[in-house]
Length: 332
Image 1 (spheres, rainbow, N blue to C red):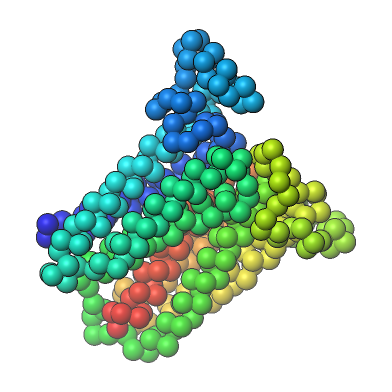
Image 2 (cartoon, helix red, strand yellow):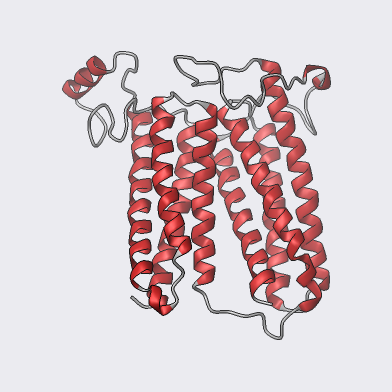
């Protein structure tokens, strides 16, 4: 397979990964993470029990979890797409191995294959450990990491240079790398907020309702290993711990916004090439969209479409930042 054909396959994988991230958010936000109480099937089937006989058999095998077909389908559709993505990544790794003599990157495809196998394990543990927050957050971050590494591989396979170079902004490479770390931390905070069902703990802007500072508590809000429970569905933390998580997510959003907005404006004002001007405008536009979605989640009490979009736009924001950083580091 030529490099061009491999690049097209990686592009397909990127689209699949975006769908998987979106479906993962949709599954989580519709409380369908335990729609199937077993893994990798659903009540022992490869699809969802729907006939009266299938439902009766399923509920006899899993009496603690009555069949809810809508939630079960949400979970299984997510698994189907995730499985398809895994197969495509396997194909990319095999092709890259066979083409290594032609200079095709090998480390990234191999690492992606290891990551997607670990993602499958996290998917299993999400079910078997009954939505333990640290597992749910790790699964979310693994999905984001898979998408980002696929995009990085796509950039590695794409031959482009900045016309004439743009050395005046080369010094912003380190700030772009810092931006990636800050944004990754903010995405992790968002995952922790979601996995602990803390998204609607604060219902006012800009930070929280009156008296929120007196309710902050860090004693258990960020415990990675929770007490052993039958299930963590709908959360196990008290109100003050959830409020603390939510407040930290909002403060992180402010830090992320100001840093990335500053970075985008600096690059736009100092860049000479059209590529970097477009990337900085795109970064700022998607950043503003993400802030607007975050505010809408609070004002409109977490509507499903906006909440899912908030996850997807976060992924798009990271992709733009990765392209900006990659271009600054390798293409100037």
